[in-house]
Image (cartoon, rainbow over all chains, first blue to last red; front, side):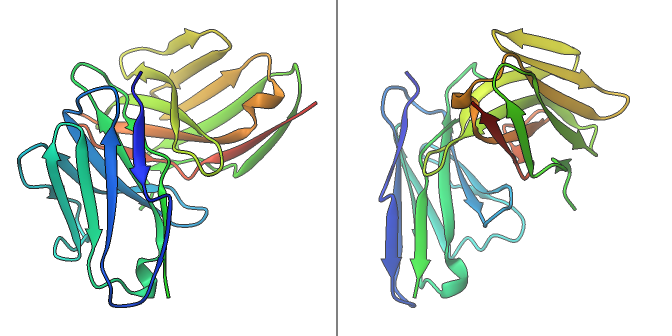
Amino acid sequence: GAVVSQHPSRVICKSGTSVKIECRSLDFQATTMFWYRQFPKQSLMLMATSNEGSKATYEQGVEKDKFLINHASLTLSTLTVTSAHPEDSSFYICSARRGGIIEQFFGPGTRLTVL
Amino acid sequence: DQQVKQNSPSLSVQEGRISILNCDYTNSMFDYFLWYKKYPAEGPTFLISISSIKDKNEDGRFTVFLNKSAKHLSLHIVPSQPGDSAVYFCAARVSGTYKYIFGTGTRLKVLA
């Protein structure tokens, strides 16, 4: 149990376009979902925390208008990178937690390349 | 300012021997520490955690030790197996939240 999927696994887009990444908890209802970003040889940096039906809480320095997060249900959260630029190229990874459990369960990640 | 540090980017160990991965932290406002394992092109998978009020937690081949005075934790894998080869991340949970701070990871290679 506790499987989290992400789609797509890899995306290449042109500068100025928007990209949507989906994160789904497949076999449990996620109380909270998280979005991280990882640059090469660096740690996972938390971008935002989202709870179903409410606005996401963004970490300091993360532009909420650029990284739109929608948590429409207890099993689905989406991250939209709007007007993407080459500096947005990165590995984006989501995680989910369920009530009463300390650990988060991670998706496989999405590699975004902006040309 | 990196609050959770893994100073060894890589480690090689012979199969059957002990692997020791280290992690240091600078903030006392963490209530749980966790270790995750990550294979290429996959998300991190949870291995083991420890509460800040404990100094040891064991689960099979994996043991985590916490030294609060030194703000240091370590993960011991005994015996090491080739399938343990992966990147290991330590993470600290900010007290009273679900926010994790991750280290930069240590790549473990277990040689057959």
